[in-house]
Amino acid sequence: MKFVDEATIRVVAGKGGDGCLSFRREKYIPKGGPDGGDGGDGGSVYLHVDEGLNTLVDFRHLRLFRAQNGQPGQGKGRNGRQGEDCLIKVPLGTLVYDADIDERMGDLARPAARLLVAQGGFHGLGNTRFKSSTNRAPRKTTPGTAGEARNLRLELQVLADVGLLGLPNAGKSTLIRQVSAARPKVAAYPFTTLHPQLGVVVGEAQDFVIADIPGLIAGAADGAGLGVQFLRHLARTRLLLHLVDIGSADEQEILRAVKTIEQELQRFDQALAGKERWLVLNKADLLDEAAREERKSALTAALSPGLPVYLISALSGAGCQALMAAVAARLAVAKEQNCALAGAAK
Image (cartoon, rainbow, N blue to C red; front, side):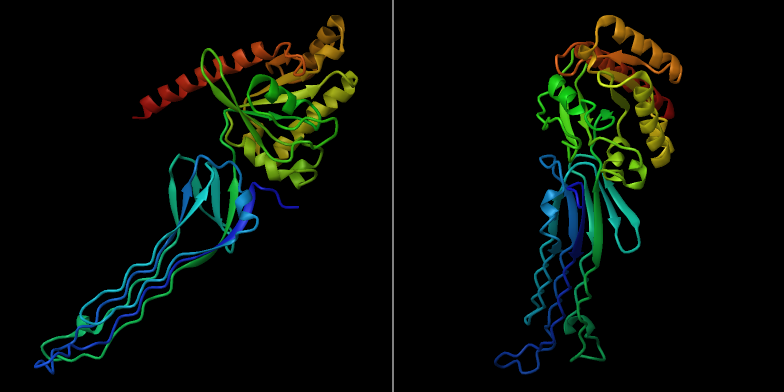
């Protein structure tokens, strides 16, 4: 099954125009000499970031992109017109690979970034270029060269400050609806979310972007469920919020759920597993106060020491604002630290 965050396309740059073989022939000037012009360069193919896009869905049906060929040269010293470049719009955060050799060509992670993916062919030379004192009527020209052609694999990694992860139906989509204006689908069955959802959380300290990805299951690192299709989206986040449903399971099942996600992160990418992660215990409204605190204490004791733990109800909103305020404060500190490191490097 293909998802809209990955696509394979073929790009073909334009061929250079051929040089022209021509001689000046006018009344009273029977031997006017060579006047063949050069061809035009072939158009190149570029990928260009369009911040109005957020998926690669447009490439599911349109997979071939061609730049225009250069025009051949003409007589009277007229050069051919250069072929128009082909500009392909892609979302911010697109990784570009040469699909044939599996080599990464670029990472379009900056607004308005542009990447050359296929160079247009060079123009051919007209016979005017080859005239000399010993060869006044050259009949030599050169053809234009072919443009580059490549098969590209595009992968989208969403650019977000905070990533939500957890098992299916942990309440990730409900939380992002509660704290932002994003409106992902919410339903009582697994894998309601089929592609990443982004929401902007407006806070007093600072605004930040939060990403909701499809739920993970055991074996996700090997492709089970929606697997690695979306684990990559967490690579660029600064902070991970690990949501756990504590309202419909006992403590041992909850602990197994947490360990399952931790193991999948470690199997997929050690750097991702090492990112700062907070544990968010959701659906607390299904338990009384004593049971909530008991489960929070039990999980805190059983998990890695120092792992922040928060109790919330994404449905009612209880605890969500306090959680978002803590996230905003943590991101502000991280931003200051990055600025300080950048200044020291200079």
